[in-house]
Length: 206
Image 1 (cartoon, helix red, strand yellow):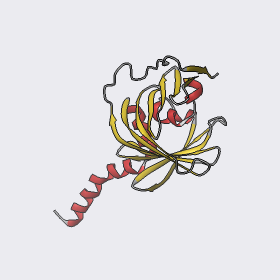
Image 2 (image 1 turned 180 degrees about the vertical axis):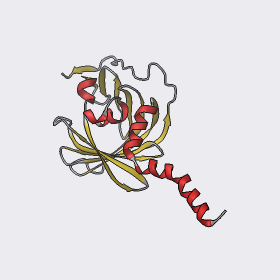
Image 3 (image 1 turned 45 degrees about the vertical axis):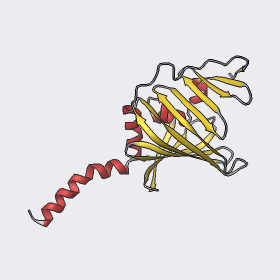
Image 4 (image 1 turned 120 degrees about the vertical axis):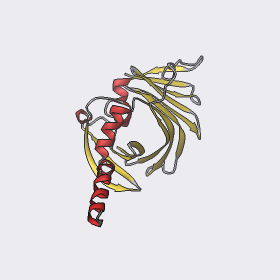
């Protein structure tokens, strides 16, 4: 085997991996199509504005379409649960639960990108971004004017989202790292059910 033949074979063998790694849009679409349930951990850090430096961490899980559980454990407890019809935001310190329709709360939000299904281009303009920090990046800009954020950048590695950077309407950026992601586990049937605790106020938001 000549060196030229060996090099040609090496390039051809590596080409599919290189193409996949360079295309965050494809990774997002494959993630939505192939990963129906997932669990993992998150850490969120705020930058800019009054919340600069504030950090939250906890666990998340989801089941398509539209069911998810986002549980903040530190520095305080807070729970956001969607059963696909309603989204519940529970703040134990306030003794309050806010309930919104899932369509209103998720809509063109980052949750729709990661936990929803369907045609992304209906709600977002997707733009490839330069690779950085060992990740392949994609920017999603909401088409509607009521999304509550300017854009969200999603960094992918090995077909999974590893980082989100969300710029909100107030100029604050949320940096969210996702770790220990397990794709397609079997989840308990009650994972995405929410029962308002006794003595807690339920506030309906229309």
